[in-house]
Image 1 (cartoon, rainbow, N blue to C red):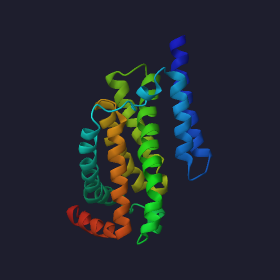
Image 2: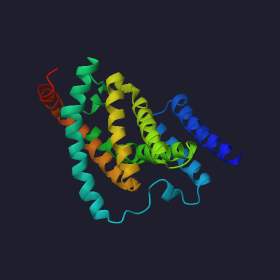
Image 3: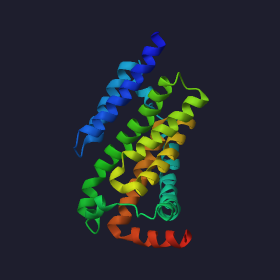
Image 4: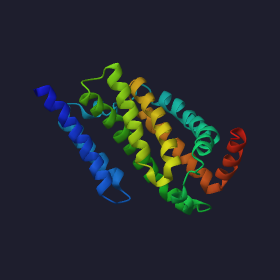
Length: 228
């Protein structure tokens, strides 16, 4: 009975987080949700930092040496292969108009960087990777092979849905990128710092392309590489 109640409680936590996302409309929602998530994990575990994958990495230099180039590679994969492929399938361009005000505006880009690193890189990784994967596994009875796979897939789908403002194509692209992040976290030692570095570098470079209008060049190259 205790095990059943424990599993149900994990699902209730996830439902609570989803409800906060859905019902509260603010630009800083990810920060609020991250605080809620940290409180939940602190309640459920005796070592919340470890449970969230925020233990100090074995080597900070190695984490940076892997994360920075991985962020660049992920950007190229997303812009040159994944995005044109999904757009060819859906016939709907990815909607990134929310970031159009950055184009040609260096000051706006620089002002946005702290929010990108704190909100997207750190908070999104805490919520969508560490929290969701951990709580879903617990709801499914523990970190078995099947439970981990289900948690990875579900967390990735929810990550995609959280980016619904990018349209259906954006949801599919973001869910795919989320799947990569989830696999790195779940099967790569569960230290979140590598994810944070890769995510931050990816978003920094991606918005840098918009700033310089090189995103249009990448789009043109991508559609030549995937000529569907």
